[in-house]
Length: 400
Image (tube, rainbow, N blue to C red; front, side, top):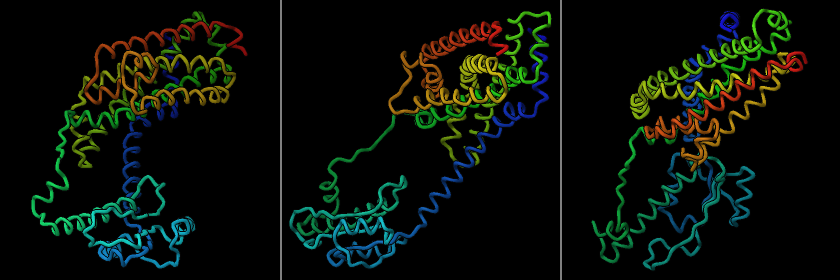
């Protein structure tokens, strides 16, 4: 078994593709992803904030102060139109004639002392995630409403601190019981697993295809089978080779994640990230690695079984491609709101790993549940390894 293991490992170490998947990709994936996300987000935000939005305002003379604020805003440019009906204005916006329409009621009186609420109509495209028009307009309306409030309260003799007491009788001062690390872990912990686990899968995939279906295609599998060594030892040697590459990818990935996360957080001036990565100590990183080891064993045995079944390298790729969906779906489940780590979710493969990594980043992991997650993953890995060994014993599988 060990001779097969060393032989396969030596051959893989000479393969540039293997080195790329095992070493280069995990080392570079995090700075590339963090850098690209930051660059794209910064460019998109800067471009959106610099964009000028054309607007029309109906009955602007009824609220000259608000109309002036809107006119002098750097992101708005006033255009004229003869349209006044909401539906016609909506269609004009859809046709690209302008971006925003504000309809002030014809009976609106800004300096009125009557206690009545005026309903204004605002029409614009609310589909974009970055709703800058809505945010700008919300601030302008809030400022204008504040001016009207102060004027009306002053007309009845309410000034100074009395204004705040009337407009906001109760003020809430939020004090979070969660640490910065916990807040960050809740937001980013699931995404960390979403990066780590697929990299382990990728670290196993190419070696598994090469030493299974690849040997069939090259015609070297028969040579191995006539050697004076049991088939169980042969398949276990191949399994250990795939496991080694997967674990190497997992180890490099965890170290890369810890190092680049802290470095980028420090250089970018993101103190929360830097502090969180500092709090995520060596023991936490080793616990993450401890969870990735049995998970990588699952990937190695499942991928090797598929590779042994395939007739050629290309057929193995066709089988393993759809299998990646089975990796991403449980990870995506862990990202859903309300999905928490408990005694039930601890038994869902891959989802439990993702939730555990999330809790580790938060610093709120339950060691009992963590033990259950690792134990259940080890049991599943053992079952799949046994299946892989049994699969390799069948002539109809080896010589399809």
